[in-house]
Length: 227
Ligand SMILES: *Cc1c(COP(=O)(O)O)cnc(C)c1O
Image: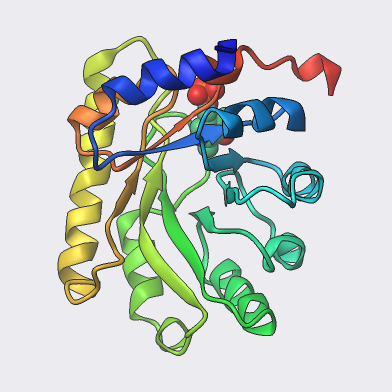
């Protein structure tokens, strides 16, 4: 078994049945994705549009579900709208309108998650609950028929403090529950809580994650200098 296949198998053994694994392949070549694919992995996450598009093109023959997990600029939606399976990083009404528009052009419905800012760090993207509620109550949102909001996504602080990370995940679950109750109680597709990365996915699962986004413990460390 290859190293990547071995890593995936170790993670999957510990993954509850209701939790999906998004293999985050950013900075790693298409060959690494292919190796994971041959080990049975189907969902892959990328955080940059250009890299996502080039791997999609290179691996077009494989039935991969591509997820965009990083910040998305409105002017780049058009490059991914024809094939992206899920966008984890919706953080404005303007972006959602653009995704809806390009999904319609491609005769598709694109699954989206709302990204929330739950970490203490300033730099991370994401909404707060009141911004999300404003968005979901808007007439613009109600008129969109080519997107589906399937849940929420968040990143915990980069920290060794397990109780802090746990509290942040728990806050995201609270937001998820609130939105589910208020806006999506009739929708079975609003069901995803995307949280947990290589260093904190165990905690995320204990806090209710349904989708972990894991890169380095599958593919090894990222070498940004080579990019
Ligand atoms: C890179 C990245 C991940 C995966 O990070 P690892 O620590 O390598 O598991 C998860 N989510 C997002 C949004 C990322 O950008």
